[in-house]
Image (cartoon, rainbow, N blue to C red; front, side, top):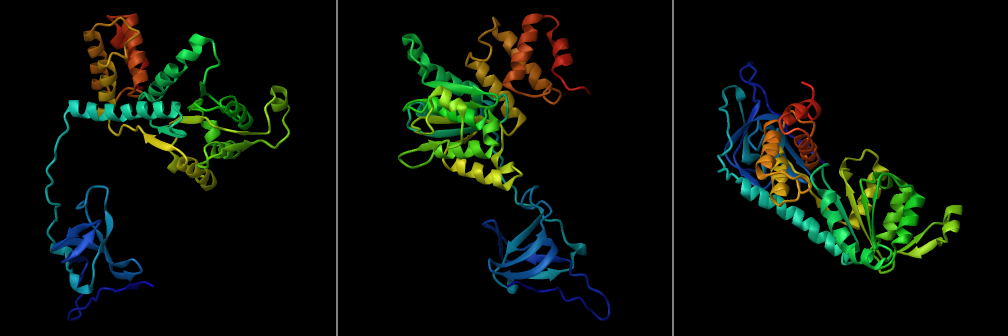
Length: 356
C-alpha cells in the first residue's frame, strides 16, 4: 500500500509555491544525500520498498540520472521549500584519473587474451559453450579461428576428419541437427560465426539447449520425418559430447519478442558469455593500433612501419567521417595504400567515407 503526502499550500490567502525540497538525510543508490536541495517532482511516498521522495536531480548524480527517487527514513529527514530562490546544486568534485593510451591498449589486449584462453578451453572440452558478442570488425572471429586452425593442424597432417568446423551464413534447424551430429564426439567443436538464423528460430534454439544442457548426458532428438537424415544415416536421437562457440553481433537483451528472449536467456544460461564491445571511438582506434603493433593486422602487406602509422593516423583523423571504424576498414584502406601509394587518401575519401 502506498501513502503519498501532498504539499500544503496556503499563506494569508497568498499562494506559497513549495516546489522544491531539501534532503537533510537521505540515500540514493547507496550514496548519502545530506542537506542538498532539488526541484520536487512528487512528495513523500511510503511503500513496500521503503519511504522516498521523487526529485529532479538536474544532473547532480550524473547526466544520465534526471528524475530519481531518494530514500528517506521519515518525514523529519527532509523539508519542503520555495524553489524560486534555490541555489543551483553541484555534485562534489570527483578526481578524474586519465587512462594513458598504453594502459588502454593493455586493458583491451587483456579482454581479447581472455577470448583466446576461453577458446582453448572450449576446444579442449573443458568448457561446453561460449557466446562471443560485440560489434563487427573488432577481431572476434580472428581470435577464435586462430585457435580452431591450431586444433585442426594435426588432423590435416594425418589426413583425418577435422575435429572442428566454422559455420558462417545461414542454417536451417535440420542443417543444425546434421552439423551437431557430425561433430558430436568429445573434443569436437562447432563455431557458428554470424550464423544468426539459428539464434532466431525456436526449433534450432531447442536443439541447442538440448546439446548444451548442464546434465551429464546431453541427448538431442529429431522425431519429425526426414528423408535427408535417412539418406545420410543420421539417427533420430544421439548424444552430443562436443562444444559450441557462437560469435554474434546480436544483443540478446534487445530482442522484441518475449518468447525469443526467453529462449535466448535459457541458451545464455548454458554458456560462458564474453562481451567484447568497445565503448568509445578511442578504444576502437587503440584496438587497431594494438593489432598492428602485434604484427598481425598488416601481415599480408609489405608495408614499412611508416605506412602502417599513416593508415591508422588517417583513420584517427577522419573517424567521424568513416563509414565504420574497425579492423575491416583498416584493411580496406591498406588495400588502397597498396594500390596507390600517392593517391590512396583520395581513394579512401571517395570509397570509405560517408557522403557529407
